[in-house]
Length: 205
Length: 205
DNA sequence: TGGCGGACTGACCGCCCGGTCGGAACCGGG
DNA sequence: CCCGGTTCCGACCGGGCGGTCAGTCCGCCA
Image 1 (cartoon, helix red, strand yellow):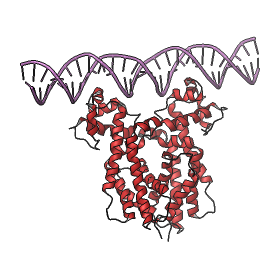
Image 2 (tube, rainbow over the protein chains, first blue to last red; image 1 turned 120 degrees about the horizontal axis):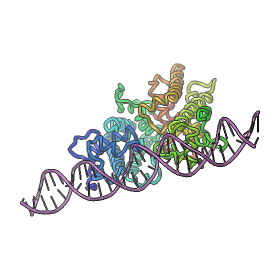
Image 3 (tube, chains in turn yellow, red, purple, cyan; image 1 turned 45 degrees about the vertical axis):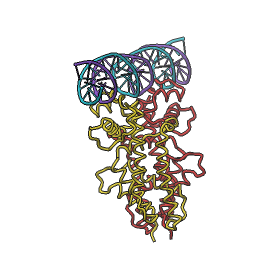
Image 4 (cartoon, chains in turn purple, orange, green, blue; image 1 turned 60 degrees about the horizontal axis):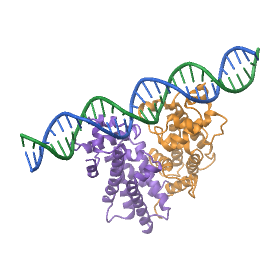
């Protein structure tokens, strides 16, 4: 039944074993390149080599497919980043790790990231995706905490924490609009460079 | 004739005098809130209180409406920013002015900005909008030049210019995803704070 | 061996999409 | 007073959309 979809996760590459994984993977690819509205259920079915009806056997509607991709991607991002924070690093090291881990995540799960980041939300839909929003808030709360820790430790000056968090997130979130995989720098390296710029500043000394 | 549309510009608020201005204004509002695909020609006609056919009297198709908004907004952004660069300011002052002017522009022409920023491009459409892309490139070229000037003057350390430009643009471009007008800070002030963060850095001294 | 449940299909539904068309209403100039 | 042009409308079109449904196939377990 479609309810079993709950345990599935959309991998960036899928191995045809599990239909649902395949559907989520192809959908993420299509959503990322053509947008939610620009991707039809027929497109998804065709990309998977199955009938449109079968989509509705595994998911109740188009939005459930999208919601699974977005929720899965956001939750996994949070866990991915937390796993990569050095336990015993200095506070600035941990901020840097947050940024590079996010870059690495973007590189690894590109389609899912773009699909869940690109769409935007009218209020009713927002309510339907509140679990996803919760993970997003947790992720943003984490970077704010790391910045606050760095200030408390005396490593950062006393900047505006929410605003600084948004600066960091903006740099990371905007990457998908211009990054092309054939660049010489990986997203993780770009994130690290961003950290250097923001940490040390532009001012010559 | 529809060709006369060439001279029109979409204002953020419209004063019913010119039908085309009204159409462009309402369309920008709708595109900004519901997206391009999510906005139908019927929606636009209804918002303007006119028949759908009349839309096609003034514009050849839906894409022309969008293209006019996007081109107008992008070109005006470039001119708006250039006008506000202090002739005799120091190089860092000019970078700061670039950022605050962009924030002010965002505040003033919010719907047009969001509409032309939010949509994303498959390759064929990109070609149709090349004039718009030209202005966008000019705008990005400008911030890079300002950064280079600041480095040459010895005010900035020798950072990676394209990457630094993208950091600045990312901060500015991502604002529309979280900024709500009832905040205490104006977009211009936020942009100025971003400049302070990036210029002075986070590191405590 | 029989039957039951999950995987799967193709034909079909009503709706709304972007776009067209023929003509009405209006208005200034001869 | 009529003319030509501009502004505007309602009815209509083919097609693609998300979603439904009746039914087939097939492997597994009793």
